[in-house]
Amino acid sequence: MYKSWLAPSDSRSPDQIHVVVAMSGGVDSSVAALILKEAGFNCSALFMKNWDEMEDQGTCQWEEDVADALQVCDMLEIPLNTVDLSKDYWDLVFKDLLDGYKLGRTPNPDVLCNREIKFKAFADEAFRLGGDFIATGHYVQSIFNGQKKLLLRGNDPQKDQSYFLHTLDQEQLKKALFPVGHLRKEQVRELAKKAGITVHDKKDSTGICFIGERDFRQFLSKYIPSEEGHIIDTAGNRIGLHQGAALYTIGQRKGLGIGGVKNATDEPWFVVEKNLTKNELTVAQGTSNPVLLGDRLTLSEISWVNQDNGEYPKSLSAKIRYRQPDQKCLVSKRDGRGYEVSFDQMQRSIAPGQSIVFYENDVCLGGGIIEISE
Image (cartoon, rainbow, N blue to C red):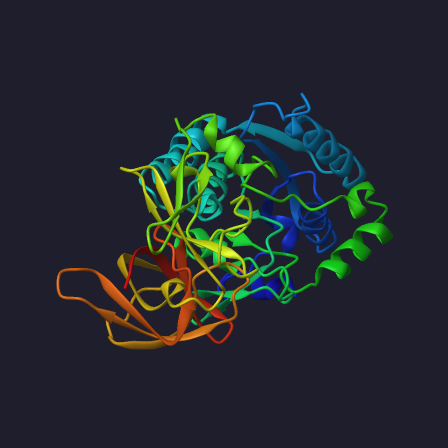
């Protein structure tokens, strides 16, 4: 199977190819290393430390993860190196996240983390250590189509991560292997268990890339100055208080603390607008409320995995958030103003700063950052 991961012109046998596995201490990267090892590749592992602040409980998650990674590597008999990329992560990912929220946007740090850290800073270190390829535990697939490499959805629809990897270019993709992309999560765990990998039942990491699962608003408030302000409905009535408008996201439902509003129904409330100048949140009630819906958005630029053929408009499918079903759309160029996307159906809570990712069947074509919803 490994032949489909390599360029058709690559005639080397696996033992002649050095693959550096991005070892996180979790089950996905562990099984990625297991598959490569069993296929005969010359493997080493590299653990990246990207965040060194303590958890709320006073522990450092990366210390536990590197211990798990070392245990797995000892079992697989592959060497483990470590690299501290915490400064790169702060400068290239976390500062961008904070700047986005300060501007009232809703950034996606996982997309930026993959582009700037995992497939750039980490890859540079892996190649410095003599690696020919890097391998990760992402649930995506890639194949060569002639001279180009295509990025495909992972075979597990519940775990597919192509949305987060849509900014990869050809050079990055050609040097990356995704050994678990053809598997479902339960198959990965079963392979790990059969091989005696101790982290076979380790809980999946969730939350912000490398930072983990936290009370997100409380976490952001440590870095973004904020103060209490008013929550208003679309008629301008004050119906509650928030902890700082910048700390909330468009479309947010949970954590608004709105209850007992006079003449209101029991339907949920959603954030529809953030006014940072007035420090106000505007909310609307009901999942089908017209103010939540839109069928157009604009992009300043699009990043294509393969070179853009220049033909517009393009009829594609797209997601404006992770796990959303594909939505049919038309992508057009705007004279001197980037791109416009129009959807066949209304979309709920289009959020500037989030990513829109384009697909053609199972092929991930690329995507861009949402600028304006119309």
